[in-house]
Length: 231
Ligand code: PGA
Image (cartoon, rainbow, N blue to C red):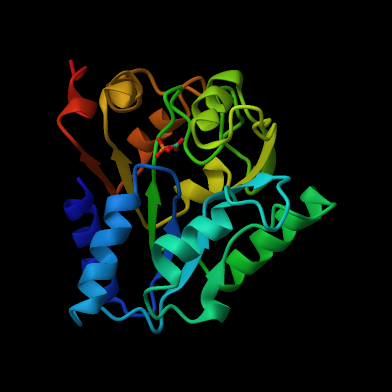
């Protein structure tokens, strides 16, 4: 899955060196980023004109918190490749005024036109970004309340006695669907039900990822376990 996903990104970067990439965090894309760093080290891809927009960020977490997605992105990718600092966009989850941060993020995105390739993970409840079940599909970047299921999942990466954030800043479904091309990643049996519901079930805001059935350019990269529940 990681290699297939990295190849899709590499193809995009090679065919359009100034591409705008929408990037996810989480456990799922770790191998994809490792593969991209490896390709970069071998001189196969050049990120010097690439622009990136991250999907989401916890709101709020202190700037030095190890779980911030900001930190994840630098550790997994940006520290190792040549995306110019000024081309990197990640929602700031440390601000007082989350709504203002969402507007700023949307305005920044509009300056670049549209995302060429948006990469997504999927939650066990079918969320994409932090668009939780029931979220309106007309939203752009917004502050989202995390569902209990999502907070339980996220708790894996927080210390036992530490509260998981209740909210996040996330691109909306409208932002995601506006991308020219989308790639959905999933690995592991815990995701199999959500993947089957997203790809083969009814198209409904109760399964946010089911909206992807309406996208004209969707690529899906899965491991064997994640496709176990296919009809
Ligand atoms: P994960 O998160 O890659 O850590 O499972 C995916 C998601 O919630 O979108």
